[in-house]
Amino acid sequence: QVQLVESGGGVVQPGRSLRLSCAASGFPFTSFGIHWVRQAPGKGLEWVAHISYDGKNKYYADSVKGRFTISRDVSKSTVYLQMDSLRPEDTAVYYCAKKGTWNWVDYWGQGNLVTVSS
Amino acid sequence: QTVVTQEPSLTVAPGGTVTLTCASSTGAVTTSYSPNWFQQRPGQAPTALIYQTTTRHSWTPARFSGSLLGDKAALTVSGVQPEDEADYYCLLYFGVGHLVFGGGTKLTVL
Image 1 (tube, chains in turn green, purple):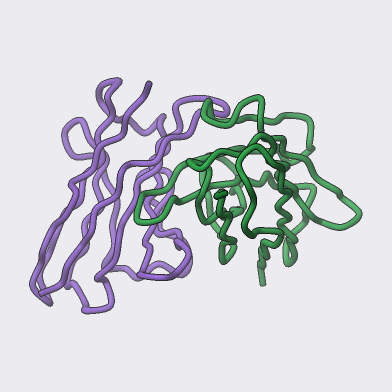
Image 2: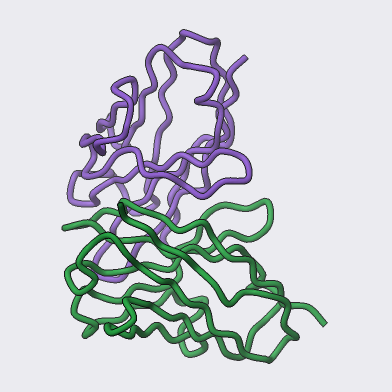
């Protein structure tokens, strides 16, 4: 069965960096893209970034462009979200989610909390 | 900035029917926006319900259906069950790398 497991969250000071990981299994990793979606405490969902099935195309929300970088390691079936210059407003649960064959999202990870605070 | 709007909250009696909607600040929502719907119960990750406007995932109960209603995307829940109490989010695709979630609807079953 499809599984997405996030890790790497925690508490970090403003201006510092953190890298999240999303370990994928149960589907052909190189056939599907992966999204990162976040949810601030008590708020709604916000799309953050996407990497295409072949790793060639990467897209970012304006709120994180220039600070966050999405990448992947095919040998580990893992997608990463490198988060630099973190701000308090980046505090959220970060989910990775699998893209479907076309424009849909089908499976979600359990989420990982990132807290940016001094 | 593109904004996707949902009803903040709705209440429905058990066994009743309720429709949630999803509007776009850019104009009418069409199938080209590939509306997706997700359910999120308290303390849990979201789960996918509907994609491409009307298609249920294999695990989605038949009481959930998607449609276009006027100039909005819609999610209708028929024969509402207590376990349907949750937050519901729509997602619209505005282009490559331009996805926007709605603000969410809190559905109360009372």
